[in-house]
Image (cartoon, rainbow, N blue to C red; front, side, top):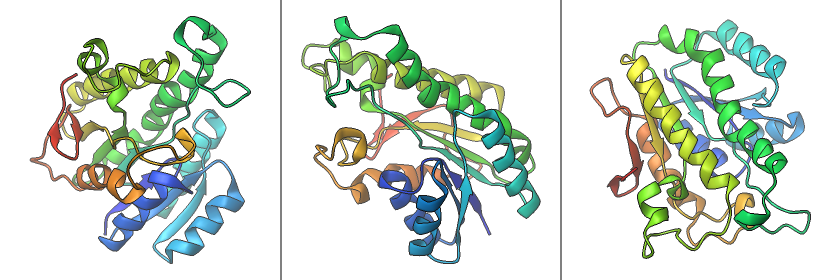
Length: 237
C-alpha cells in the first residue's frame, strides 16, 4: 500500500487531495499545525487518514512527524502543499512597492524554507521506498514567462512575496530532481482555486484544483521529473 504525507492537509486543496488519494488506495498522513483540525479532518476521511502534527516552520515539529511516520513503516509520496499568501492586516495583498522585507521573509519561511525543511527531513524515508515521489505545489504566478508578458496570465497580480516564493519553489524542484534521479519530483500549478488562501475568490473548485496534484502523486518510476505542470500539461518556466 502506498503511504503519502500531505502538508497543510486539514482543509482546501490538501484535504481534497487526501480524499482522492485515499479513494485510490493510499494511506494518507494529514499534516496539520492544529491537532484538533487535523483530527477532525481525519475523522471525516476515514481509517486510511492519519493525522500528524506538523508545522513546516518548526524543526522540532517536522522531526517529530518524520519519526512518527518512520515508526509506522515509512513513506512513499510527499506532497508539499502547505503555503501562505502575503496580506496586510486588512486582508489585502500589498502592492510590490509597499511590501516589506519582513513580510517577504514570513512568506518564504513557510512556502520555501518550510518545503526544504520537510523534504530534507523525509528524504531518508523516501530513499527507502520502491517508487518515491515528491509533489511541490507551486502556482501559475511562479512562471516568469507568464508574469513578464503583458498578456500573460497573472500579469496584473500586484504582489511580490507570494509569486517570488513560488518561483523559488520551482527552482528548488529542479535542483532536487537533478540531485535525486531515483525520485520523481515535480512542481504543479493547481489553478486559481477557491480556498482560504485567496478568501475563496478563486474561479475553480478544489476538486478541479486537486486534479494535477493527485495525478502527479501517482506517477511511476518512468514518469516525468524536474517538471512544472498544470492539468493541461507541461508549463513554461
